[in-house]
Image (cartoon, rainbow, N blue to C red; front, side, top):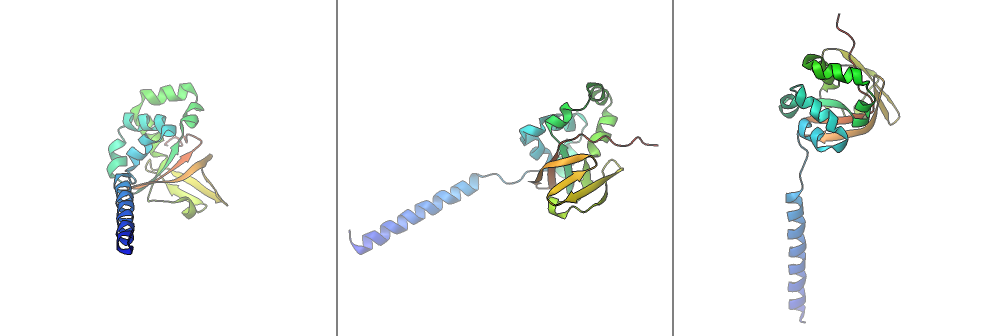
Length: 166
């Protein structure tokens, strides 16, 4: 091979590698809205179903930015069956419980301060951080900072029940 042929071969290999990497980038999906992010996570399938039942899908698709403290499937399994039955029969109560898990704005785990935050339900929740551990009320964040186009999801280990309205 001549020097010109070797240079030409190297350029073709480089061009092929570059084209392959660009194709890979074009097919990777970026963050999606909050509703789709929740529905794409197998550990949040119960929450996804309840969001649809409560009529909150559009809010989580187009509203925001929001921070969703999303109870995992295991968190919902720990809720007494009687409570889950009551929520299933009362869409307004279900909506109140789910919106108690959502605060306005995009709050990344690193930005959490020991303070209260107002939820979409109107009640306040206590947010705390100790080192790398983030909690909301009695729930621990088990997976933080799941990015969405209109906010962020933090998966928690507890279903939060809002205080009774007076």
